[in-house]
Image (cartoon, rainbow, N blue to C red):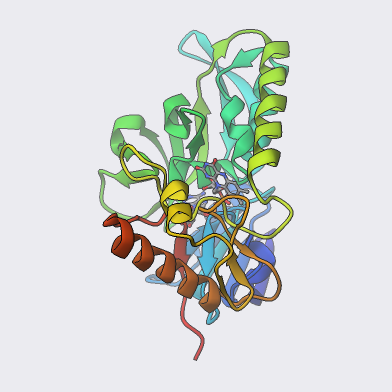
Length: 296
Ligand SMILES: Cc1cc2nc3c(=O)[nH]c(=O)nc-3n(C[C@H](O)[C@H](O)[C@H](O)COP(=O)(O)OP(=O)(O)OC[C@H]3O[C@@H](n4cnc5c(N)ncnc54)[C@H](O)[C@@H]3O)c2cc1C
């Protein structure tokens, strides 16, 4: 194996909320072939968690049992390829989504600008069907490359998954993780795409608390409404649990304004959920994923 193996690695170093206890072991592969060898040599039944940039993850203070695979910068391929008589972008899943939107613009493709606003990896974007400003990741996916628990690679089609708003459910049995994707974008005007990217970034800076650790929107928007509007209407902006706080800039963000624990953040999430349910009768569903064990 040519990658880097770490034991008892604190997950707070790998999540945008800057919280999370230790993972038993973490592996950063050298490349895809190396990842395949690593997975093949893991004991059967070993719990495996893939982590990108940790920008949608709350890892509990007790950490993660089993093996975490870090993809960011490890699975780093990004190129234009010819497929079925047209150009597509092939991207490995450790590449940051904003990099893909810039790459597309540089090569005069349009439609990938929204990825600028999603500060995770393409792997995380595929797992979450991440999106914004009316576009979603799977809108531009033609096929994905997956790896299973024993390192076997497979090409999967769009209809191998059931895709919905922030939801991607495989229609097949067994664990497979994303290692690559083929994206189709319309040929267009790179200069116009760059202008759109710039304007989306300005919108983000104006509306999101980007200077303070956070994990983006905590809850999905309910049909026909906005979670942020409901949370604000309940008077929850600025409410705290320890140093975890409902952002005063964007009510659907929770920020770690100091040394919050994952337990503080989770308690605040539960409080916001219960308050919106009680006052508005709306059962908000979480967008952020909570994993790992409670500290003993
Ligand atoms: C400031 C800010 C703004 C944000 N804005 C948006 C937004 O506009 N729209 C939006 O959709 N999201 C947004 N997010 C959330 C987040 O950036 C996205 O969900 C992103 O796609 C997560 O990518 P990641 O690499 O950080 O995934 P992680 O947080 O590392 O992982 C998220 C989930 O995906 C799984 N996963 C990761 N990689 C793989 C893989 N290779 N194979 C299988 N499973 C995998 C993980 O196990 C986990 O369950 C925002 C976050 C922040 C901090």
